[in-house]
Image (tube, rainbow, N blue to C red; front, side, top):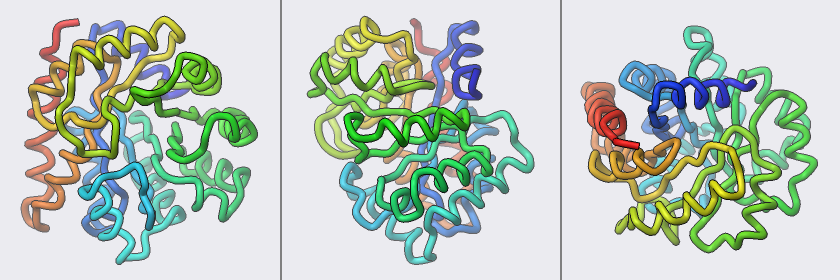
Length: 268
């Protein structure tokens, strides 16, 4: 059982929903990333989604685009991100780390080399936004051979046949994108999301995480009641963007505490 799978199993036994914050590695400066990761865990993160900065993040809205730009100023690429995970692992061998990024940096070094390096860094899962499931069978095999979970996105427009294809390739969990559009969009419709999550559950036993559009304690609590994981990205990055070196960790800790309290209070 992978670290992601065992974390979900443990939370299920406790009747809890996972809270998965997203940050972009290297934002606002590479010196902060590992400390931010430990702060997220200390204040309630069950797993961490760590974004790999990319110059053309097509699935991301302006908030996370700016985070990538801030990181890229300091030349934070895939190699630097994996080194950050290694450093984090020196004092945390428990919290699952899920890399989220795009295919180009992986293809630049090759899928096998990437999988080897991700395994060496002790990465637990990988979300590759622009790898269609029809074309990444070999990549999935490379990850699974090393005990790394390939995590796939499902959207409101994903047809049932494609859901079947995706859940057959995924492991760890599947990530339901609750909105049409990019990260950071508004107007989360919980009733509609609930219906889609229920529909996905009919096709897989994998845990279902929900992200995009979760902006505060109220939407986190409502989402936690219907999903196995709540993923918070843009709101977390906004807290980082609005901070300075002196209050960065305190601001992130305060937001995490607010979200964790809300997620744990959800009735399932």
